[in-house]
Length: 623
Image 1 (tube, rainbow, N blue to C red):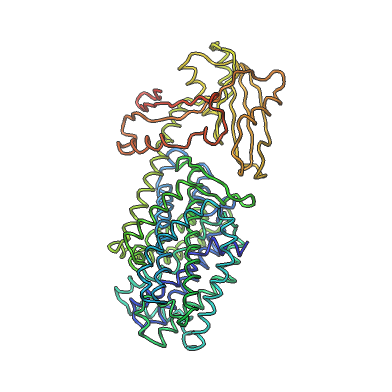
Image 2: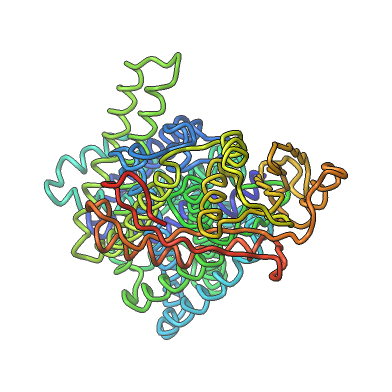
């Protein structure tokens, strides 16, 4: 599992030597070779080794990591109403949106930086860097459909070879210039920052490039678990990175002119076939680097859907061993298009690096605040220790974020703009769903209340059965829909079934397990079924098993399945701005139809689009 994690989790951090040291030393000058290496090494140790590995990765939510996992812990898994739009929720949503923005730029800068290494093999080959990068990115996003489990099986051994090559290259150049080991002393980095004046901010912004994969490392926690990730970091990744950055510093110390070379990393390998092989290996490693953040983005999107901050997209599970390994086709297509446009727009890795870092350092700062809130509320944890940890974490994150803000004019506005757009979508969707649910449950009725009302008001009944299919949601929502159905048609069938589906079953391939059914009076039934996450629920099969349990007193044909979707038409009292209503309406109309994944026969399906006029002045919803 640790080797598989190398292929999915550590790609971004592992390919930073391609450009991080070269960009930093070109800003600081060859005389600062030791100081730059010291800054990068100690930033890696503090940000990744201390913050994430030792602290933040222990704050998981049922094995999942990332900002939304922290949100679930803060809100106990159920952010509702005003709390979901409070300052903490907004901050966490924006932090997650920053990672979505970073996810578009990471594959672009990683792959393009490797392709530019062709010029170090043959200067005439440099013109092929851009078209080759576009082709590789297209193939990479196409391959996502095969899942991170299969990709990890291929990528893990490749990344293990990559890290061994990083270590060997570094050792060779360290042996030729052993005084470079002085960079392990943090005072060299501190002196460089102290003597740099305002120019030190730009230098720190370049050093950040060495740790841009740290947040994705936490977001990928659900893919492999903490132990394989920590093992891979401590035994392979961190030692290899230290050796390689020291080797690059030694290369500059031996020949100061190398500080101005755009392909400094590839100069570590002698000219000839070996350098060409290094370019090929670097290309493979950068493809894997892209995988690290894309996998994290898929995990974040899945968590956002579970918490109600994104509409329900189609999610395909790709592993029977690890539930967190998923593939989301729509997001994959959007990020593929975004990456290709970024490569066409910026055209060089150095230009893309100018836009790189703002999103991920902002997300790192948000993670620190969320981690503080989680630990503050955790019983048995010293609040003095919690405050000290927060101060320490923010003393790392805020300078890194502030340094990256200097890149806004160089293209840093791009990931920020993407993050703002994603945050607007998530917050608008949550706000709209809260309004809809609030009005549907303005007078909440349980299942027992419904049976009493059905008997007392003598509802008109006709032969047949209607099944209200709900996915992991409270039965009260089904009660509201049943009453709305009766208001519209003034009739109900003899049997009304509320079917609640849950993907929480331990067996990933279970088709329909742990089925429970309860009969209420007035022909009302309440059923629930769990199914494995690798299988989409087969509603007719589940109902067949439910009918077998019900026995002779069960429901009769004709049987119809009811799916409902609510759309806001108007909203008075300015609860939603005009652009929010338009955006929410667009998202509602394009949400994934339940019939696409529930295997419901079309001739027994009834889909209701409820047009809601939310009017808080009247205290209810006109539907």
